[in-house]
Length: 133
Image (cartoon, rainbow, N blue to C red):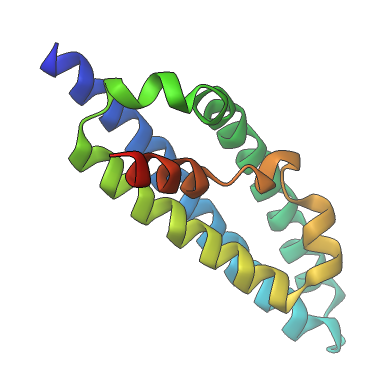
C-alpha cells in the first residue's frame, strides 16, 4: 500500500512541477512581450506571441491532468503520503504566486488565455486538508 501512496504522490508532484515550469516560462515570455510591444521588432513580437500560445496549450493539457485530482481531492488525499502533500502544497502556492506575477504584467490578455479552471486553486484543497489533519 505504501508503494501505491508513493506513486500517487510522485505523480501529483510531477504534474505540479511541470505546471510550475510552464508558468515560469509563460511569465518570462509575458515580460518579453511587454518589452517588445513598444519596439519596432514585429518578427520578434510575433515569435514571443507564438511561444505564449504554445505554452497556453501545454498548460491546458496540464490542467486537464490536474482537474480530476482537484475535483476528487477529498477522496484522493488519503492515497498520498503527508510529505508529498506538503511538497505539493508548496508547489501549488508557488504556481499561484507566478500566476499573480503574470497577471500583474499583463492582466487583460493573460487572464483571458489562462486555462479556464485556473481558479480551482489546488492549494485551497491542501489548506483544507492541513486544517483537518
